[in-house]
Image (cartoon, rainbow, N blue to C red):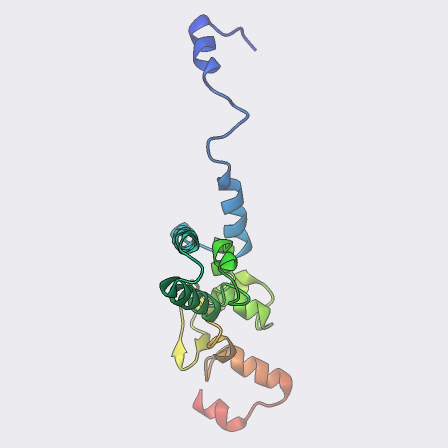
Length: 183
């Protein structure tokens, strides 16, 4: 390698090549890969929501402990986070302060499908959702960024007349000939 000229050395004095300005890119890329998030803006939205929730929780903590407004808002915030499945229990405001964007990523439909053993991987679950093979309640969902709350978690099923539901019924020996005529 050649010797650097004076002006090149002067420029490199101000640059630290070992410390990046934003080290969170590696962490974000790992989360995007783990939960197979195709749209980076989804993760950014989850991160912003976490920022708003943590700032709200810290502002609520500054109020007096026996303040009626603080108690009511804390109760509403914890109930909303618990119902959406972001926190495990609605016991204290510290749980709301410590939520992360990964908590929202774990509530995405493909991740719930993997947890319920409807699919082996998040990637294959995402493909099934995008092709319209999954419904939540009565509605067919084609967006993999769909967040499933605790109340709707039990209603994630296959679409009636879909190829996957037919294959599962055939494997279990419960395929009805009448269903073959319908589909």
